[in-house]
Image (cartoon, rainbow, N blue to C red; front, side, top):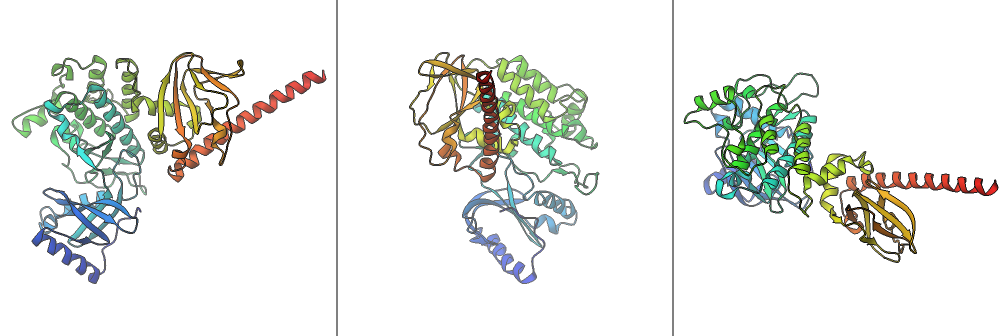
Length: 461
């Protein structure tokens, strides 16, 4: 349940919660913080401690980040530290994307400051930047595609992350990713056209863009640069710039062109190396203008630069869903959900997909190729990319048996959606899917009426 940033609590309540915090400081064990029951500690850093907690009201596990009150007592750091807390807390309920960690709740009350986030079971990408643990090239490209897609969404909401790096990207056990830690974010005010005053000098130097180092006004292109460095690191296990001291490192970032990733790993395709180089251009006019431009080149890389494979990558799936007329009015968040609940497969020319008399429970959309519709061996129709079939099973309690057969007229890519699985999807997903589905039915009804009118006219004549 997403909430706005909480205002300071009443003194009595703050005192009760504060006692929990004091107890935590002594024994490092906490049973409850606010309404959240603490399960166990997940990790700690210089500024915060993260717990796995239970939101009993919503019956879900969450990650609770408890901030260290120490910096707030330091006059030199208090103002900057509080701005960072307020920045991340202000995003509670604002960003909703499958590849961004959701912030559900935030409380800033004196020395008790904590944030409640979506719990992601997994680890950061830092491990996979080590030479001995590098991921396959196609997997890295897919990870960056998903990050770019998530950042494109954040940028449309007026949010620039400013600290993109492997340590701020979580990989779940299933292999999916989520961007986290928006504490350094730059947020465009919805009330005025100017950007909110932010803390300068935040971010990780090795991943900072030249304009970020020089404290110039920032745009979405600073995230694109950092994502390019992240891609370089995940591909090679090395940073594009290395120095023994910060001054030399910052000088290189501002003045020296980075090497191509192929310098350190010879099996990296030239097309992917060029994508890295464009993302890291110092000249903003030469760098990708939007994350959409970045991800489109990654899609082209998958289409042309990846060796033929039976697996269909999420990159290709998402780009295909976006291109289909069936999903023309469906938002990106729902598209990702549909991607995850659907099965994709390739079918060879001549193969039978459905037979007359089948009692299947699936809805099919053609992602590519052409199929032939037949009845008792006679051809009735052909369907092409973006068309669907099996739609009669979408109606509740339907015992409908297929009256026609479907054959692959060419090599075909099929999207199969099990209707029992769709019934358990989010309300928004089901609503948008049904809206698209009804539009197709109305178009087919209109076409059928036109054919009937034409037949009647011919018969009368």
